[in-house]
Image (tube, rainbow, N blue to C red):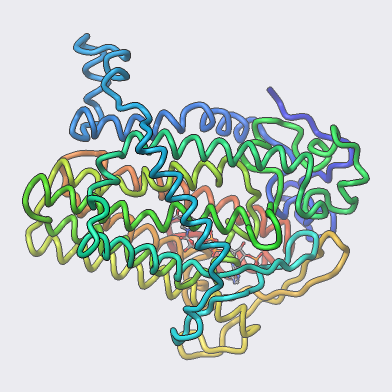
Length: 492
Ligand code: NDP
């Protein structure tokens, strides 16, 4: 089904003729207004198959000790039918439903009811009420940044339970892993559907939906069309509203991106480590490495939650199934595959292998953090800072927001941003590879993460560049001329 263009919808200009005039920036800032066949095919493929992909991986671990080809081989050779595999899959249980409800409610309470106190005693940490980036409508939203506090309190409770209270077994997450998957799917679909309905009927900031004309002037049945592509699947997947909120503070993007998924990430790994100890009476160095390297990434995320307000997820993406379901299901289930794999295969690495993995993970993290920090520092100080000990090279640029205001911005051409246009992604990829290498070479399954991240970040790179080209026009062309490579100098 081809997406039709809608009347009044600004058309996205091709990259060849980009300008940063008003129409172009309105059309391309945020997600696309028109859907090409490839995007539509990808959207439909993901909507149909992503839940099965997650199920397949988790089921392969549960029933085939993480051998990805196991189910296919069994079916092809007639040793099993789909119905046999399905019959062996644990269903949703009352216990899992209660656990999941309790978990999400607890995270909602931590998010909404406990203003941040960490910034009052942690030097260098920026929390509390912070401002996001300028939205396409020219609005600057305020956010209650308290993710680090939520993470700390949740983990404090986890360790208190493990060592003192004994309310539940630390293996509880592993023991209910598939029943919890059904609960996560229910929440993922519920929140995405709610966000879609809300986008049509009671958007939080109508101006961000339909630049130039308030939504309330648009007849309700037209509102979705006017605001978006007119393609149901694309709207559902990529989201309608830019910044859906309930009340003043419950921001869907901030909550679902960070919690419950990322707070859960480290708890899930801890539960896998506890299960490995229970089954094999020790925790292997590979499991320790996966726990430590991923914990660094998670803590970094919460320590820098304010910086995160300026990343693509918050600044540009709309809230739909991609973020809603992705944060509830894809992230906690597929980002934790290494720990799950190590429960079934307790890999103990040789010392050189373990040291190599640790170094790769730490160097990757260093590049990821320093690159992101350089851009953040540069933007916060408006270029009045030192990058690698020198005054940074700058490209001055400008763009127009939907309210017609002209804004000025700067692009950094020094530090890692002078090496390649997205060198921060390279650091992320090195860290991702380290988690996978910690699992040895026995199976493909733990390597899913690096394959996925390579596709995600390459696609993200292209998506971001398309948007920046439309937003900054010729100024962006000057940047690409100064820094010709996207990820790896000389290669891509
Ligand atoms: P970036 O942090 O690279 O942000 C891109 C934006 O930065 C652009 O849209 C532009 O925004 C601005 N920008 C681009 N070039 C420059 C420059 N030279 N100087 C100043 N500003 C510039 O991208 P993301 O938000 O995607 O990623 C943030 C981090 O999160 C990355 O390190 C990434 O690896 C990680 N990440 C991890 C994921 C995971 O699942 N683990 C998923 C996604 C990201 P503007 O409009 O403000 O100019």
